[in-house]
Length: 480
Image (cartoon, rainbow, N blue to C red; front, side):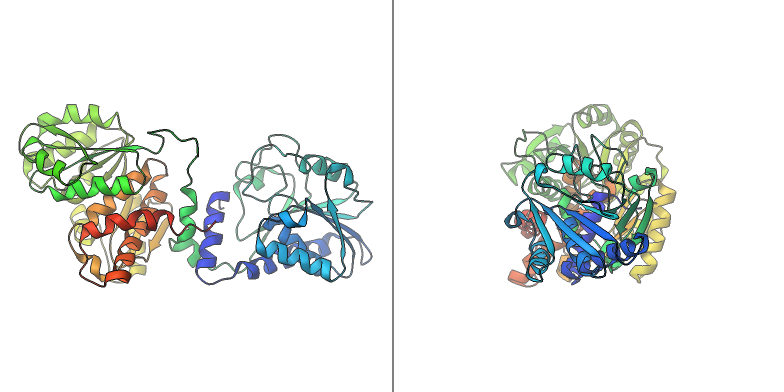
């Protein structure tokens, strides 16, 4: 099963891997045509295709070319110049130039499907939810009123691919041709579902890519706080680490970031940037008597980034245990704080970001082979009950159910502090994304920021170099 949102990411990742979307559309159209041929009553059957202006319609335009044995009519809902993608427009133009029976439907009154034996519903795909608008709503009613076999492309128009529900009128399909993998909502339909392999490589799902960034949209009407408030708890023995994490969280899109740190280093932490809001607590290190106040502070934030620069003093690790035992929100756990996670009974939702040495301290196993490491990390994440982002030349992200691998990054990032940047980026993303997605995108963004630095300057980067490139790595590569 694959959700509509994940399918969009995988489709874009396939394109980034070098599989042309035009090639995928050709395979999709051929799969639709194959099902139409199977359900048609004879070689002289009449086929009516009702197509929208997106890639769902493009799949149907391709299908028409594989149905020359039949009497095919293609109705486009809307003007050709408003077809939304270049490849769909090319396939529409191919039909027009080859003098297929193509018709332009300006409004619902223009739609005349005749008396077809098979109708292909290609109005809207998996990425569209909510009630159908015109002319799609009237077209759906017209399709449902016909005495014809209905074949839907990817999902019946008007049906939510993830839930199988409809907010209003929807096409009542007899067959659904869906691509790559079945969508969750299709199992609830009274229709035969055909899953077509269209040539998307497994790597498009396994490796994090630019398609994963598609989930990072922003509402133009957003207000301060809508994209998250992050509390970084760190510092004491080290001052740079919490400052790096906090600045990275801001660069990755969090609206407000505060740093809780010992008063002894608060001035130094504040001095790294005027953008930081510092909340000092008494003393030189985190201690158990700070925990109650920190939990109260944490509950006022969407996510806590816990660990950068805290050190490993006994009283600090005792305080980390106490905090995690009392906290039930979302947290990114990094650095020395990681070693206490396996021993804590917590209701918190954790994303743990160890390097391989820290993973071993947590009780996990690793391997030089990223494929073997993927298997080991997946198993340990399942035992741990939390999401793991294990850093390496290939980062492995797992939550016990799904596993992703990230390949961005370079040897220049072995310098200290890049992990603190990663923790902050992941914390910002965890405000708006599910834990596995936040960790996977965080790994991709952090590595890509490092790649951008090295592409410009070569090796010799320092962690602060990543901060300026995090926005570009987060939003600059989005494949719309």
